[in-house]
Length: 529
Image 1 (tube, rainbow, N blue to C red):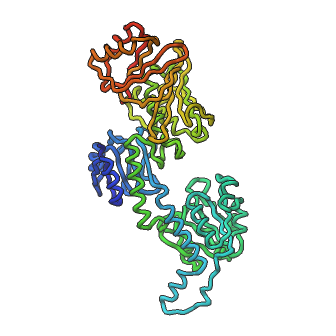
Image 2 (image 1 turned 120 degrees about the vertical axis):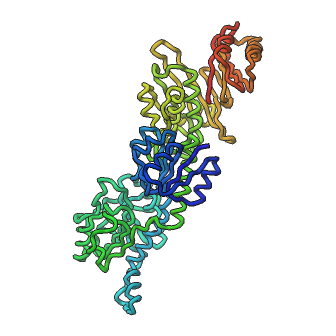
Image 3 (image 1 turned 30 degrees about the vertical axis):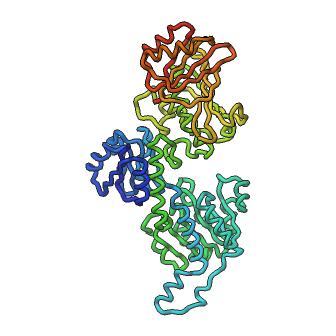
């Protein structure tokens, strides 16, 4: 059971997820810096929103901390670099508000097209000016999407339902992918020149700052309306003000601003501008989802899994087919490390074969690294810092992919070449069963198996002749080591390999006694923990 410190409110359903996983939840709101540092020292995980500053000092005070969750989209209040150094997973909820943002975008498009806020305000003061607020239809109009990510795609589908034609600018989306959505890709200036409405869905980067500027707006199609529910920095607000005043742009609907609250009062004062105070994610459903999403990820991180929205893990996307193989990869890494000794002297190869060989397998390689290193270091180890720790230990790993299946539809193999001391190569391979979704060891060196990994295992390399199995059983029995399961693999060379699962660890004395027995060539003790 882990202790999870929650310093700001999240939805009760999120807290229930944490408790259902067997964890203790400590709700401590409004703590000062000193009290928070004292609390964090006892916590295994921390959940915050935007009001808690997770500083370098706070992270260092959390000596048991393995995960930090931000119930929201950004992580600006978390020292991600320090967390990475300490092996602490940082997660957020980047998709929790995408539906709300897409719906707010459509609301602003309609408000801008039909002058809804202006007409509302005018009617409220007793006027009845129908001709003054005549608008335009969305059907048959062209919507230019700048940024065809998740929110951009949701807006695309909704705009198409209104009968709009959609074009897009996104240098990271292929023509084929855009075509699947019935969207035509084009350069930004061409998009602005052809669109009746332009909706921004960009991330905040140096490249996207003032993406919409005077030069771009100069080529705008007459009557263009601009909508921004993404990042305020993407729009040069002075250039937009000038374009509206000069009649180049018909109007704008803005939810975000370069500074918030907005400082460009003249822009907001224009009758052609509809504005909301950063409400894109402000729905009850979105706020509930951020709490649920971050809780689910904290549970995954504490269980040693791979949270899908970890911001400081090099493999950001984990293909769904690969997910069940991550525990297998880590187990194989631990098994190989116990079997092969000084890994720093060898070059290791990790091979992903079958259907998974067609995927991005970076997460699988990280899982192997975690398994390989767990017995080699006392420092905190996770998917976050596995690469850096592997490098510091001189671990040389190459990843290979092959879509050709062998005995199994999918398998993962770890192998080593000869070491500096002339050690022979070693191999361990495994797969995940289709029905049980459980890891199985299918090969150790030249011996084939189909066995479930156990916490305590004894590998006995012996001559393939009668009486040896009984001898091994006798020695283990005399030492008080109970056999839970046993498998025998044979190689073409005539040697056999016994893999024995025991209910408790065998001692070094037992290993030596086994190895000195007649017909036994080598014995290794494997502890998977």
